[in-house]
Length: 281
Image (cartoon, rainbow, N blue to C red; front, side, top):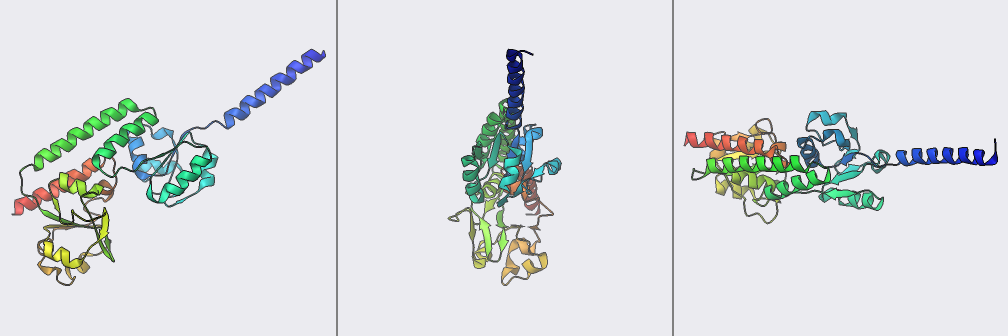
């Protein structure tokens, strides 16, 4: 074989090898470190694009077949690097440092942390644009807006129960109306007794609960009914007297605490509880 022929073969081999290497290094798929974003992506019919999740990404259940890259507050960076995703979604709070590190490694990282209904709707459209599901996102947002308006209209002009939501018991903590869950309570037709707390989630005085006399109590603090009804001075609280106390088994906290399309289900559950209270009045 002439030298020119040998050279041509070598060039072809090198080119093929180069193409193979480039293909192996091509970024592909989405890694999601936020349970909220995982739910939204699946609601946009893009679950197949997800290649990695955190352990807390539990809805829909089919997500558990995906690669686990750590927990919400403890991310396995090496596992993410191995997946080589095209796009990574993070939350803020505990994930700010990992987001910074992943950006420095050359990944496209998007931080999503909606604190209210309007922010959630905007973020759904933003996510839809990023994952090339813009049309689906617009349709979903329009549907959610319609459902929210129906729930608001149904509560309009009706008697509003005073609601106490407990997220922690030692120390006692509740939510303000500036929190996502606080906004859902208000939209569904209830009055949050700690609406004006300085922070979204803050410590409260048990005496303040007694003084507010809530009609309904939602307990996500892992305490028991027996302990709650035996708290000092709480026996005269209407919610205690009427046993209008609701736990995780009664209303899934993910429906109220996660800023996802499923919050509509949470609002409807709240509206149902409030309606039952009105019927007893």
